[in-house]
Image 1 (cartoon, rainbow, N blue to C red):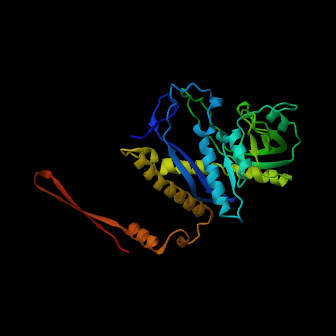
Image 2 (image 1 turned 45 degrees about the horizontal axis):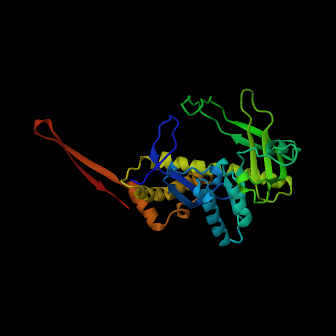
Length: 334
């Protein structure tokens, strides 16, 4: 009970469940710092009696409003950390005017968002993507594009061929533009933002070029600033890795409880467990010589040591009629 109606999956089937929206904290070196906020939302279908146009519905009643809620929480955190710069890095779902307007009114945290919409502009070339493509190259960077396994076609998803990993050389451009308000927000003034364009100019034959458009409220004064913003956006994949640990490692999709509230509690515990697993994995790869005391208390270390040394002694006796009786005794040595 308490679940919501989810969108149709890749096979076209509709299911009931919860949507997880979370904000994951990452240091500039990629080290995961923890979970700042997470919500398990049960989506409710729009009432058939609601005849309002989408543009007439307040943002507070729309699904994207969750991005604004999380931004506001980030601003509250930033107020307690005056010596630390916080940047809210988001994927394309966060590309909507109201979020940029929220940042303008409450500018405690900067935004760095991958653009989804090629917006109209008031001046030539009248399109956002074309405007930044026409600017001169200001820097070049190299990134690692991971390999991709082949994927078969599904009803709602195109087939994908396998792709080997490679190093991609990208050209970076940047331009400052006025982001116009949409028609349903005509009373709002345009918002000045920086648009960063990253393009792989010479991709391997038969391979789609890497191309990103990033929108940011960060101040950009040099090519170094452009590169820094670009590097920060590449860290967004840390949250994807963390969610993979949640699903594959902690197996939150297999949780079974009678109510959505109990599911939320179980998922809440696993959010922290998945972060710790991810943190330990990354630290173990980069600096395997670090002592365990950095991550565990004395009590935790003694418990883990006892668990590692635990043995199960099983004695089996063949009984009459060929039956087998087994007695198991668990012992542990600390």
